[in-house]
Structure formats: C-alpha cells, structure tokens
Image (cartoon, rainbow, N blue to C red; front, side, top):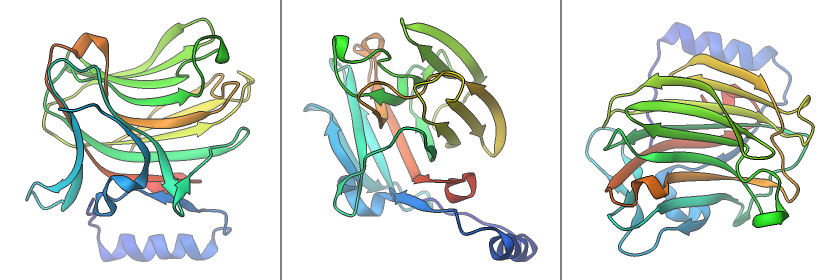
Length: 235
C-alpha cells in the first residue's frame, strides 16, 4: 500500500488541474497488495517459490513479495484482473503502468516484461519492452523483431530501497507508431518509438525471472501497482 504525501498547495493545484482537464483520464487497475494475489491473472512461481502479500512494518502497509529461491528461474505475476476477469490490453492504445520495486540483490535479472502471447513462431517479439536489475544497474530495453536488443536507459540502483517506475506504452505493431516513455522516481528518463505490440497481443509480467539467476535467491518487493490511461493515473 503505497503512501503519498504532499503540501496543501500541491493538493489544491492538483484539484484545479483535475477540474479544468478533459475527463479522459482513467485508472484501469489498482493492484494494491491489500487485494491479495487475486489482482493478478495468474502466478508463475513453482514451489518452494512464492508470491504473497504481507506487511513488513515499514510504514507502507501491505506489499507483494516475489520470492525466487535457489534452483528456480522464475517467480512472476502474469496479467492483471479487472472486475473479476483477466484484462485484455489492446493494440493502438496507450497504457501507463506504475509500480514501486525493491530487490534484495543487485542481480535480480528481469523484473518486468511486456510479454507477448504465444510461443516460438507464434510471436515475432517475445518481449518488446523489458527491465532488468543486473550488476547493481536498473536497465530498460527495447527488443525488436529478430531478438535485437537495444539498451534505452540505465542507472545504478541500491538494494533494499524502493524506486518508482512508470512506463507509458503506446501499443502498435508499426515501429513508427509504437512508443515507450519511462519515468524514474518522477523524472522522465526515456522516450522512444518502436514496435510494442506483437501478433497475439501483450501483457504485463512483474517479479523475478532469468536463467542467469537460477543459482541465486532473489526477492522483489513490489508496491503501488497501477495501470491507467494517463501518467497522472499511476505516478
């Protein structure tokens, strides 16, 4: 449960903005951990791995703990649930995805995937957008057709410290129309065009994943999960 603070002036200013802005903003999904793992469509984490919601008594309230033990490659949550059903992201749309993340290791591998549906020849891009923590560095990648990886942004990150990530993904199978915007702790750090929508569609994956960390214990604490149609919905 992410808690935000601000001055009265800021709150009044925000209210004024809401009043004069067009009514297009919409929070699609609030993945607050108080709702339990049912806020996700499915959990991909074999025993003895686990995904649980718990209170760490640090003032945040309930947060998600993605616990990937030794011997496993994956502990992720796939997709989101809205109104009791799996939410279907659509092509030619813009989605904003926000969350706080804190890992117990500087080698947590993949912590977010904009994952394509299908396997093998069913997709052209396995994961058009992906984020990793490796070597103490948070990295944002765009992966083009043909597994062409391009590092779009990176920054050193401390372990066991929450960072706010917001991604704005404009979905399109046309590289000229697809777009990704990235914010880190409230600062815009990347903005690029590229193919962001695969043949069978895409979905979110949060957690820990990677063959390179199979021999490591990795925990990803995640809080403040939201999906909306504007940055203001999820920041």
